[in-house]
Length: 95
Image (cartoon, rainbow, N blue to C red; front, side, top):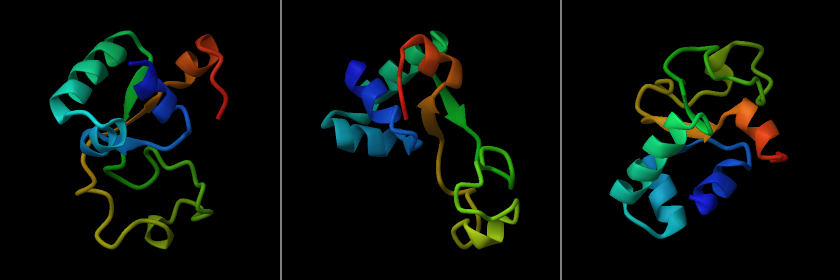
């Protein structure tokens, strides 16, 4: 689980499948770890289903998602996860 937390602490949200690939494990193993870490409040799901929710404006779109979103939006991105902000402080993680 520490590897999962370290990976997500870089500030980039990832899907379960991508996490499994990067951690050299199975999607089922990642799901198990995610369930535990979500229940502990260490990680959270990121909602990219509509403009503005989850958008940090890192791309400078000013709330206009057509500037930085993939064609067709984020609806096909899958569920993504990141380290919860409160957990970053508790765990002394720096992004």
